[in-house]
Length: 550
Ligand SMILES: Cc1cc2nc3c(=O)[nH]c(=O)nc-3n(C[C@H](O)[C@H](O)[C@H](O)COP(=O)(O)O)c2cc1C
Ligand code: SF4
Image (cartoon, rainbow, N blue to C red; front, side):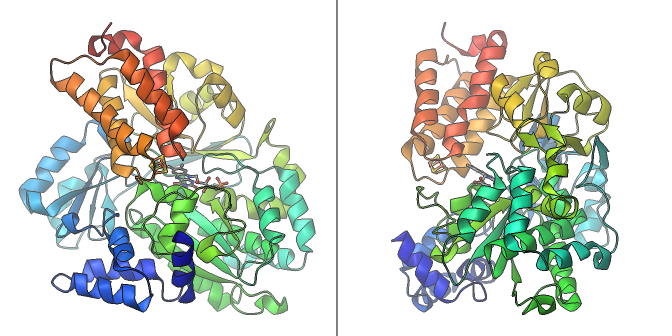
């Protein structure tokens, strides 16, 4: 059924995109919402249930969130910073409870106090200007430090775009196989979490026959604590866009689709503006610079669902289907967007390509450690003396990241949640054993993931943090498989009861739950949640013991 809907959605393609139309209808209409959604289903020749299924899934399109005007961030970094209760009270006092909603991580983890109003994000001391914000006379004062150690490439400024796009001209004059060879030699691996070699996917898609192919940029950076993709989209958009163009050229894709999370409105606007500049300069469009290659961009603004970061859910989302994770194989390189050959890559992975083509794959591979080549962006949250966005060579000691780049912790910290909600919980005692690369984190029993760092201060109860992780997963689960759909809720209930009632968690039951999640989940949302919980049980047994049956 899903495959048929992909075809039907694909008939109107990206120009009259079903997902965008669902978003528009749910925003604009009130009384005639159902009628318009049903009409849309008829137009696309799909069942009404499919359109309702999609509309009722997302935070921004579902009926119960209608009427919300201002949203408080409920991401992990704002939670452990302890800023959100007071923020929420201030906002509710001004705007009313019924108009105040929640959003999952606005990427303002460096200064917390984050909220969203009228398509703009605010944080830090912005809340003191709520009246001015609401009257449209205030601009956010967001500021974060950007720094690097080693051999920065992604944080370096690239100057004016005419000069920068000489790399694109060179690429268009180079044989595709030669370009692919450079990428293979660089051994650049996916920065979206799994660390999968990029060249492998590009090659597979290049070799798959198809008139229409897509390169999709996964800019759904939903991991609370991460704002590295946001940085690239807002501050280095031409590294990302050119990376998509180069990848598209190699595999023969006529479309580049940027799927950007709705919680990053500024990134959406910046990318749209910069794409217009590319058109004006003749770097995209038909027969680009006489090369015979055609390439267009489409920016899709997402509607608030963490699971859309998982690549197959993301593709279903663009198609206007309910974003449930798909069983693989077939892989997107064979049956991707609208059933066409598709490569999905993370923002940071794509942003590496211009540097690789400009400097050669060998130069990229010479940076880093072992199979983790190049550099990695790291987001440090507000618990550091110098929170911000940093770039370091893969293999850099974690100690250097914390003490030199972040300049140490601002408050006593007991653990760091690194790599998003499904990443490991690294106790501070392990800092000196880890280096910033895939292998070191895996060997240590953790996960590099997006390399976002959310600190857990000494005073913050770990049981509460685990409850938050289960709650997050329960909210974000796509519901396709029962270990995740039910297990996340059972875990949340266990910890809620242990925190609020005279109830102790049966350790055998908890272990069973974690094992079931780990082994029985279809994707890494349910499958990855046990990692931080197990880390917590392993390293903080004493703190957690009052909540557990001995
Ligand atoms: C629950 C879940 C959430 C994910 N979120 C993201 C995300 O926000 N951004 C991203 O690039 N990859 C995310 N991924 C990984 C993608 O499925 C996919 O591996 C990635 O986009 C591939 O790009 P890469 O090879 O460049 O890393 C997520 C995976 C899972 C299971
Ligand atoms: S693990 Fe959770 S999010 Fe992933 S497919 Fe199963 S229900 Fe969906």
